[in-house]
Every structure is written in C-alpha cells, then in structure tokens.
Length: 83
Image 1 (cartoon, rainbow, N blue to C red):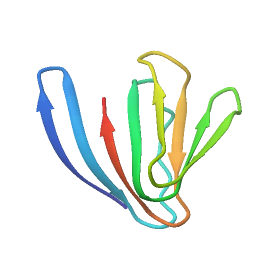
Image 2 (image 1 turned 180 degrees about the vertical axis):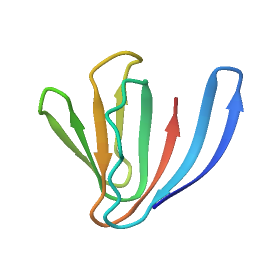
Image 3 (image 1 turned 120 degrees about the vertical axis):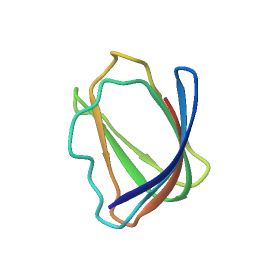
C-alpha cells in the first residue's frame, strides 16, 4: 500500500509518501521526480537495467520524459517526493 499527503504549487507537486513493506509500483513511469528517502529503504530500477538502492538521507533524481523507472521497498519507506 502507498499513503501520501500532497500539496500542489502550480505545476509542481510535493508529496510525503509512505510505502508499506513489500510495496511495488504498478507501472513504469517517465515523469520526472526527486525522491528523498526519510526512513526505510527503496529500490529504483531504470529501464536500462540499472538499479539504485536508497536509504535514509539519500536522494534520486530523474528528468521528465527521461529513463523509464519503477520503485519498490521490501522494508517499507517514507519519502519526500517532488514532481
């Protein structure tokens, strides 16, 4: 499951997102994001096969219409996301 609180500022969306253990996104995304991991661990996989593991205090950025990506967490996570 995913839970989030969202605030929009024009075309910018800011979210506080909580993923429960075992959460996997249900699609490949091409929207740009900045992820900042507050708690837990997440795994970001890119369409070209690269994988990035994020823990607390780590961030990941991808541009709009950039590399397709999807994310998951085994442990659960809390994220700050800007897109």
